Length: 315
View 1: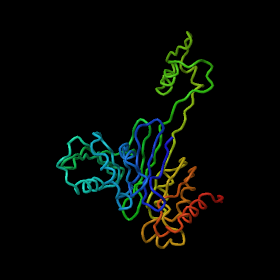
View 2 (view 1 turned 60 degrees about the vertical axis):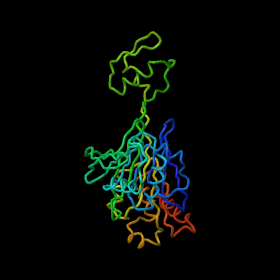
View 3 (view 1 turned 90 degrees about the vertical axis):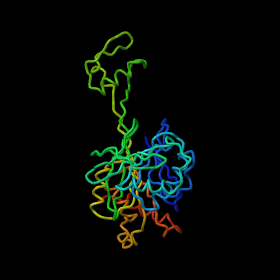
View 4 (view 1 turned 135 degrees about the vertical axis):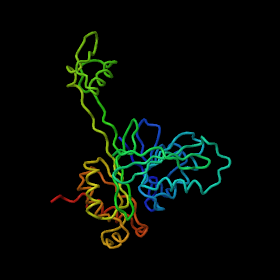
């Protein structure tokens, strides 16, 4: 399972931290000014997923790299086309005569047209952008715990939405024998499609296929992150397609429906539309986040409007 924790207070810029049980690293979705993001959090960040680089989604990157100087490892940054220059511009705003060349490395993955992903590296002290390669893939990031898919939404500029999905797990249930090394061997035989593999249990031999009935596959946990986007059918179709039946969705609830004209003008959705598209995608849980400062006096109105739309009876 992936757990999402907001590092911003409701009236602050958006910053979502993702953690996985028994996993050393943490992951950030956007890095707006967020008072709950600690130094310890920054030190453990292994990848950052930027929706777009409007100031309320990117201004706190300075704080993050401030605490990552000296970690001597690679941190991945994913985002829309141009994110490498955005990162470089931040870094070049400071003087670096005392930094070691191996203090930190940033691997930048830019999402372009037709799922083209261009990969760059940026290292101190010059912070030059080095082109590594361009690939085409629906997966922007993958590790031993989860993979990340994406779609590009219209916010007058590209705004990237991300789907985090843990890998399926092979498990054994109702087995009549004591645990042993055969458990790992049987799982491997199942995953590698080796039905004739010999499995020894308590001095008896079995073909793996004779034991497959005790195996089940636990589906991965799906967590979605959708920020600024125009309330348009094109965007809604992309959201429904990528996040269909997701376990959890964090989605912008920036304006009330009564301010829909303002939302359209600024290429945002409304809280109501966010709830409706989440329901349309059949997600299990929706988390309304990222609210306009216009409503700081009563942010609960936005949250309630989104949840009411999400929970209404289907017709």
